[in-house]
Image 1: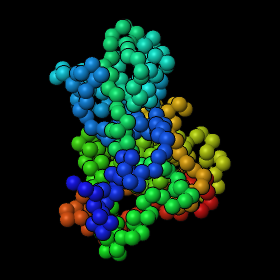
Image 2 (image 1 turned 180 degrees about the horizontal axis):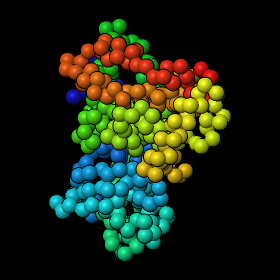
Image 3 (image 1 turned 180 degrees about the vertical axis):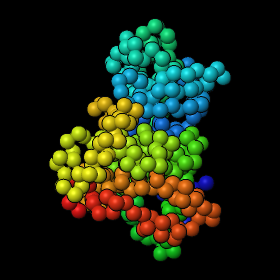
Image 4 (image 1 turned 60 degrees about the horizontal axis):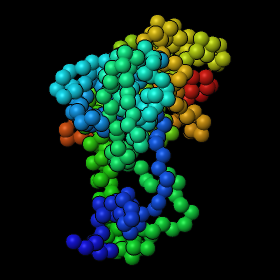
Length: 362
């Protein structure tokens, strides 16, 4: 079957051409792995699925993805897997490269004694053996570059090239109707990808967790979408209560934005709220605070005031406290956007309705 003509070109064909060189419109670019923390967030969301094969050929199914580790040791705790049908529980370690287990000396570290699965993204030329301090072999799963590319769904180049790309010439001669159809197909394709991703999270963590994580990521926009997603993963909706100050305190504390002296640096009329946050946070911090090495990577600079992560977390806290109503509207079938927008427009918070950051005057 030949290539489609210019007038009948589909978005699927154009996408395949861009993503899979050496077809017509490919732009070459070097591929680098995302930061390890982003890989961890993708893994925890179920983006790569839950069924795998180890390098030794064993079937692995993730029964329970566990929870983020906030301190030293393996990346995820209380994980449950089925290895060739046999249930095993313990920890999971995720590394960029299969050889990192040796480079990081996990094999001699007793904190990694209970690891039941090692996940990596770069195979080594030589066979890498993963063993605990007790010389127990740890099953290995390696995510291929093709799997990672499909999950990331990123353009070949993050920054637009400073010259017309190879797709410009054929698209220039497309009729208006063809371009409109192509744009419509592209929007449908993007919506389908987002829906599939949401359903994967729902399969792994449940509908409420999927909606909570998706909402948090949306609030983060591009600059803090990863950070907000990680916050929602580390502080699941089930960990938040109905108490206003407790919910705010847990989210801001787990995000790393609270400190004992914060209220002293803030304007006078904000100190009471900040003092309440800290008094609630110190009771909860042992369960939610992460070490510096596992701090969430926030971007606070270069943001419009309304998009500052402080304000976005405040919005997430407000939504968590009205979750039953928000959930009902967001998951209504058929979905109606207007009731959701009216609900969001009506959100009020005694502090965040009037402030952009924890220490700002407005």
